[in-house]
Each structure stands twice: as structure tokens, then as C-alpha cells.
Amino acid sequence: MSILRSHILGCGSYLPARIVTNAELAERVDTTDEWIVQRTGIRQRHVAGDDEPTSVLGLKAAQAALADAGMDASEIDLIIVATATPDHTFPATATQIQAALGINGGAAFDLQAVCSGFVFALATADKFLTTGSARAALVIGAETFSRILDWEDRTTCVLFGDGAGAVVMKAMPGEGTLSDRGVLATHIRSDGRYKDKLYVDGGAGSTKTVGFLRMEGKEVFRHAVVNLAETVRHTFQETGLSGADIDWFVPHQANRRIIDATAHKLAIDPERVVVTVDRHGNTSAASIPLALAEAHHDGRIKPGQLVLIEAMGGGFTWGSALIRW
Image (tube, rainbow, N blue to C red; front, side, top):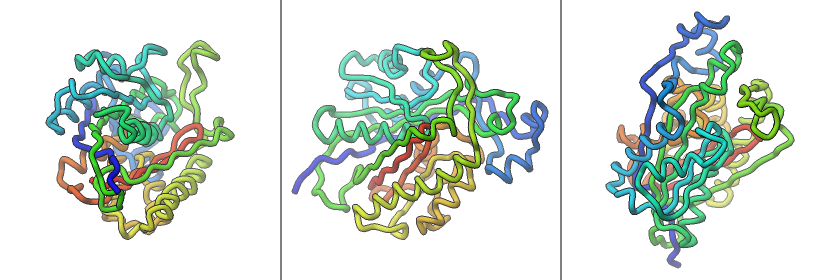
């Protein structure tokens, strides 16, 4: 049976030039490089300049993805930007990127699921494409978390960084089997009971301020490993696959210990896990597309291979997607 599958045709990324090392942070807050590396695996992160709002980061990643796909911006009729740090309350950051690319047709909107945002956005774009509601999509994860961090809180300011990643997706015919290329399965979940475990203590509709990120790290870690394994197991049950069948595991880059624990639970070979958290920190919705772009461009991810992505973020939200590259 012929069906439509959403193929990933190109990947792009952008990281701000400024790098902040653990040693630099140790001069500002009571921490050490050893403490940060031991608990998170992070050694450095990128921080956006004053002239680099989220839309600029996202635009540069989008342009790189289009170039990688060999496509012109005029071919895109759907732009979804996953971000928790938009330039403005409104309009959507996606519309600013749309205008900067010279696109004046189709739809552009933001999606907010925090660190799970890229998975949610990819799942959403997949539905538009496979139902014929869009022809080609730009899915972008872009964040400037440095602007919502309390730089005096050593438990959170050491974790996050800025950056953007993007993919170009287009619907193409498939046979409806697991040998098809493209997005094979997506699962997304939310549970708002845990809002107070990871949140920002401000907003236009409440405090009228931006606020700062707050987190109960131990609770987030505990839920993350359980929830991430659960959503991937749904994918395995649906497809009949197992961890041994996965060519590349590209998880959200929040914490090396979470990445390792999740891969272990899913019986995925550590050599098949793409890790960038040591150099990027947690870039929220940008972390998976940044990691995808790196592994795609350095030749690790090859056409026809099975790629599994997953993430969990504030809300709580979590999700996964299985893609044949």
C-alpha cells in the first residue's frame, strides 16, 4: 500500500560564537569544572550576543538546512519553530524567519513544549505533510536560554546554552513498511501535574515579566529516565523493533547521566549514541536538531539508517520519533 512519508532532506545548525567554559562560570558562582562535569557532562556552552535574538539563530540554521537540501526557500510552505524563548510575546518567531527568507505564502507558527519542542514540532509537521496539507516544511528548534537564567543560581545557570538547529522535510511516497525512508513513528505525551518541577517564574499573563528558570533537578532526572524509556518502548511495541535495531540514538542533550541511563534501559549500544551536551550544554528545543546536523554532516548518520530521537521538557512534556534517514 502506497502512503506518504515525511523525508528529512537537509539539516542545518547555528551556534553563537561566544563560548562560556565551566572555568568562567566558576568565577561567577560557587562551582567548579569538576563538579559540573561529574554531575552533567557539560564542559562549555554557547551564549548568544546582544544582536542575536532567537529569530536570528533560527534563521541561520534554516538557511543552512535549505542549502544542505539543495532547496530554495520558495519551496517551503510550512515553518514551525520550537522555542520557549521567542523574540516577542507575539508575533511568532516563525513569522519573522518566514519574512527573512522571503516567503509570503503558507503557514508559520511557533510551538512551545520546552525541551521536547523539536520532537513535538517534527510530529506536527509530519501530520501536515503526510495528509497533503503542506508540501515542504522547515522545522526549527531555536533557543536563547541565557536570557531566562538566574546567573546567581549555580544549580541551573551551568546547565543551559543557546543555539539553533533545523531540518527540511518533504512528503514522498512510501510502501507503508519499516523499510520506507522518512518518519516511521512519533509519540508525544504531556502531564501538567509536574509544572512546578521545571518552569519559569514569570510570564506576560501572570507576572508581566520574563522571569527565570527554576528546576528541581533530582525530580526532573527521576521522571526523565522513566518517561523517555516509556515513550520509546511504545515505538518498539508499535514497530516490533528493539534497541539493537537502532543505528543512531539522538536524545535531547540535557545531562550525560540521563542520556546514559536512558540508553542503558533501552539496550542501545553506547557507541550508537550521539552526544553533544559536553560542548553545547542543554539548548532545550535546539539540542536534537543541533546533534542531528552534527552527526549528519560528519558522516555518522547515513541514508537508510534508523535514527531514534527523544526528549523531555517542562510541563512535563516528552516524546520520541523513529526516522529512517
